[in-house]
Length: 111
Length: 129
Image (cartoon, each protein chain N blue to C red):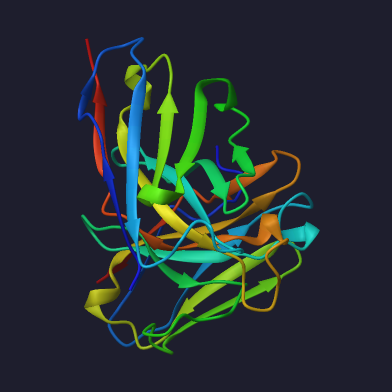
């Protein structure tokens, strides 16, 4: 049971917009700790997609956007492409657990 | 360009002690505001943070695994080591090391805001009798 809760799967057609939620609590996202998002393409290493809630590292397409509000965060992908098919993980710090925590991951399928 | 590479045994027996080495380039662990973390991922499962060591040798461990973990650094060799005692089949996973920094808008003392911006390729460790 992950401290950060994500839907196990989401899907969308090419060109559509999808969102992935990440629900935390008062000891992590609600305590002011930032959320990060990582993309893990099939069989590859996780790649940083967003840091500090909504900051996009260079090279990440602006089709991707991140936000955080209270104890929740969201990753949005517009103009969905087949190459976006991957597992997405949110991550933050939890002061009750005294450690960095990841969500359970969301598998995005482009149908 | 930052690169990290994990190395160590691929097959372990239960109760053995695992030692993994992360060899990196493109940064120095003697520079303020830098850390190296270990993160693992069991096959088909989610990521799990294990440990983090900062440039100043401050260390953080996953509370659930703290009694089994030791993280150290060798700045002269650009290496970070992780040892995990009493290995069990549930510890079968791909183990990653990752470069860790705070966001640009926070200083190096924002320990709990560090995130993982560059990852090694990972090494699969299987624990089986």
